[in-house]
Length: 274
Ligand code: A2P
Image (spheres, rainbow, N blue to C red):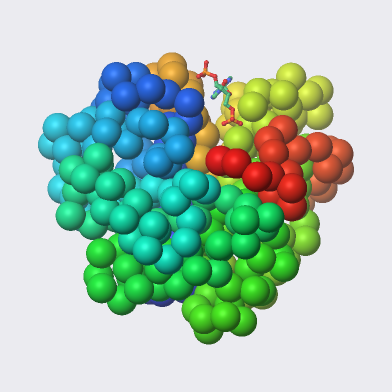
């Protein structure tokens, strides 16, 4: 059983989730069922991934109550703007075949486009209308977060960012903590790049765990919700077995020291697509 955390709007979210990028519809449908078998209850998709339909089919065909799963999807860049956001939300809901979404995120701030404040106002409205439980953002830098709060008075429940030991995001984590925003970590394994790190290997051996479990536990202990993805059921299963051991302060310090400020994905300050 996966622990639940409380968001700043009172709703609860599982402490680890299953990421579905870059699975296509048939792959996502199958993977989501396997992930449910393993015990995952938080599922992360996006309009931009093109797999909402497969994720939805996988989820609704499984014998689990809607209230027992937590579904996140995201607004893509080309749909930013007030009215277009409302339309895009309806389309996502239809593809997922659901009557509500647990968490809707603005996928990227796209500062050049300068539509994210209007998009955020639309998310605030969707939440007021009861069509989405929680609203948040993704890949937002501190300046973007401050701007949407200034414009609306509404603090996002979540900011989903790239976060792993080689990209430890100290500044964002500190701001999120101060504002009560839950951090979600995409690419918590650094797209596999940190799995071979000897420091990670040594700590894994010491705890009799896999390197992936150490990296995911580090995310949990810095206070974030990791969203690992794997196409392999054996790894999926291992990746959520991270609530029955603890990294020591020394382990945490050694892992903190691996931060090379190395992102694997786009830079939110200059990203113009997604
Ligand atoms: P695979 O799907 O073949 O398991 P990230 O989540 O940081 O983007 O990393 C995802 C990558 O890490 C995927 O390529 C996935 O490959 C791999 N991966 C996921 N879990 C594990 C694991 N437990 N051990 C090794 N590799 C893993």
